[in-house]
Length: 259
Image 1: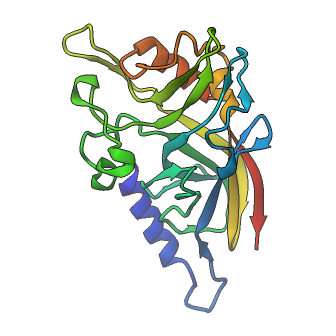
Image 2: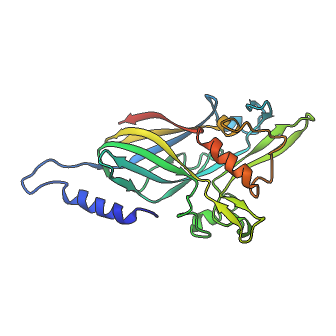
Image 3: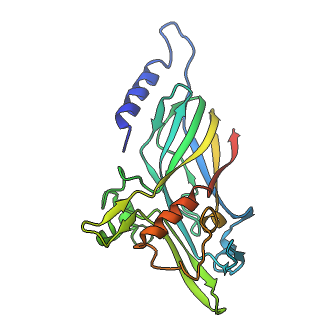
């Protein structure tokens, strides 16, 4: 992915100066673990909570969660000198299946202070149709249909809610690159976004918790009315923009541990 040339140059430079000819200080290169946790306004979401109508969104609808699968990419470590270290890989998290809740980006970096960021979904540079074979079959196919612009999903959040008639209705809160099918060719807008976890001191065996507050998908800055926006959101350009805006407040950094 992006910044690979810079990454190779930095890696070679760091490797070359691990130890000087006179037996000087060794520069430790380490990996970093990310652990993903999920909550609803502070209440942890566990496997036992799936398919239970027990949450209330900011608009007042009661709802359940039956699926929560999402993609993050380009975990990047930027040191105080502005040098960026990016493994260029990605992680598909399936919360219900407890899949990939721990992720170790495929890169070693020198110990030190770094600003840690990642991308929710794929940005346009990486969101290449059919480019990732392991995603083509994941979760029944993580691809986005060609008429909607191709590429890949960012997230599938699904469940049921109690509608205005007191009926249980399924919802599909699926995020992808925004597309306007009324134009020829289809108008596409990148709706991925960068998540900044702030500055972290990276040492040996560093673990960073990444927290997702699922309730935020429905509240900030766009108050979400599931009675209006509950399905067929993938071809809805405006809805995709709104979901991207709401996603800006979803993630936060939790505990940082050094072992």
